[in-house]
Length: 262
Image 1 (cartoon, rainbow, N blue to C red):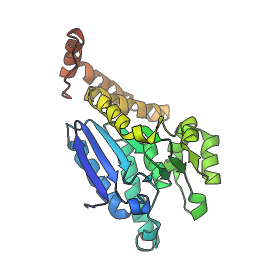
Image 2 (cartoon, rainbow, N blue to C red):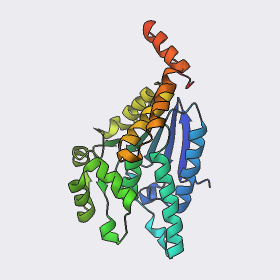
Image 3 (spheres, helix red, strand yellow):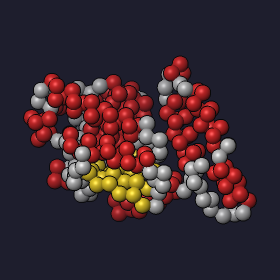
Image 4 (cartoon, one colour):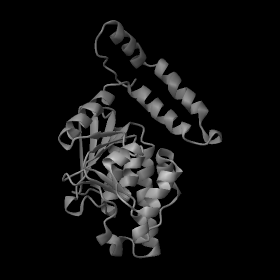
């Protein structure tokens, strides 16, 4: 389902999904989640896209959560709420397990569902003015296992309970201290620095990136749930690839490698 509130573009190995609802601080509707789902399918199939950026338009917010004005039409009944929850879970799960590196580029408010969205990305980069919160307790909204699991994995139990119980906003500095974000930059440097970083990732070997993404995700699981055979298979595939040959030759010839993902 296409939506003018979700912008999709790709250039130089970098895919980009922009939440484009600035009048509502990029609050997200069901239609928007469906459009993101479609964009993920497109980017996953594009071999020339090596890294994915998710960001918000307008310079005031990444994503401020669900569009509350849509609750009566999208989440008023039990069945409607179940459908909404299923769609958002599908998008969060797809980004968390997306086979290519993902970057949340945050400039401004990162609230509720926006924080959940950021936490499913591999890397989070924000501006100094950014603010983070999980205001569910102020709205009577239930947050399930997966959302709290992701927060707990990054922040630890005490900090997770703090942000959940108090529903308070965190500054960019506190978010960095609590490992919610990996880099904090001046607003004027944010876009260029993030694009440079994404380009650096896009220039690396795709098979190696895919293997590292899968294996680091497995490391976060309980030992009994880890797919060790798949981890070994992905690592071995790197050594058997043409990119491994190209990487060696480029190093010896003191040039930039031209990886193809094969």
